[in-house]
Length: 438
Ligand code: MEV
Image (cartoon, rainbow, N blue to C red; front, top):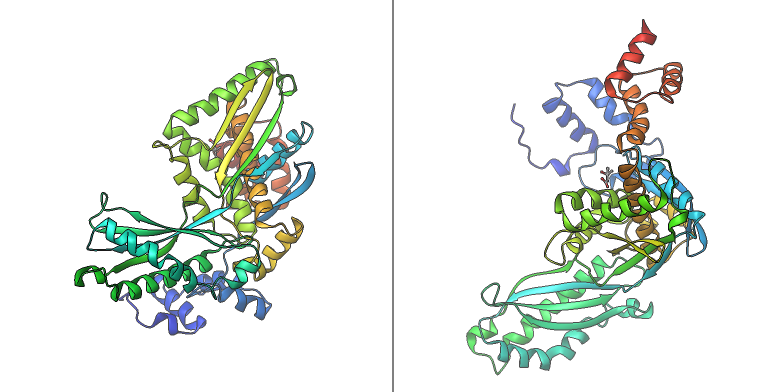
């Protein structure tokens, strides 16, 4: 049976499901029911979700949890997190509690500049293009005056347009490198609309420019698009305390703990194989808040990892120091996020998440996300340098294993109790379940 299909997007939802079930699941009613089980009874709500995307068949749940007790700049926050990985929310909550009694998290937004570029080809000299650009710059700015009117009222808008000569990298390649302030919006649509207008204006004005030859008048617009690399949309979050306030155990004194912690971060700064996993753990915390607040986690991921490689080698996004008996641990990360527009006013749970955070502006949300990332990284390093990661991880994973094997509530309770004192391994969980079922 051919799995090619034409006009699929025009089919009704039921017909799309039928096509899928017929072509991939042998007409199985059970597969169809699995899809339908996740439909919402509230028809309007279901339609809202269906319309977020194309060819929607059902909903895909992610657990939505909260991590309480985050003191950020002396104010308590309860952070919403949407994530499936079992130990993330628990680790965040534990780190929040730990730092709450040590002064909490301190944050600063360093800057909030967004970037967009018009990439184009010009078959002439840089000098000629430069003098043309300087002449038409006011017209370029004027061309977006109606597009940016309401953004300007909110305190944002275009910051600058720069002509960049990139001919050393790609033949005849130039760009309009544009910077924007988009205040509380992530700003992707606004920026892309402005860029497309710049591109059209640039092309139109070049086509009649008297200093240009015939060839030079034919500017070719390659593309106009925002950049998700936003090194000047940067936030810093920090925790610090006296070394004597760090965990002190018979195995590891507080000073040894601090030194081992700093060394673990140093390894992530210098060793890309470790840095990627280290930063992945940071993103566990950040993405969970990004998703819960209706922001674009792919954009955030791409920008964060590009920033981690800004000095030519992929490195840690967090840093740790010991200075005069004080241990400091901090993150600096670019986060282009919004608290208005996009899903923020559409998705009912996103709305709740933002309300729970007391309707933050974009800067406050950047701070909260950076804190979630730092807390997560603190939790991971703390485990890695003490008990190892598997102890806590497998404990959290225990319920997943039990659910996979359809354990009843009674079985779950008995087995969870057993593993309070024993090491969780996959095979041991199965063994315990088999013992119970005998
Ligand atoms: C797992 O999702 C994340 C960690 O691997 C992060 C780390 O190693 O730092 C625990």
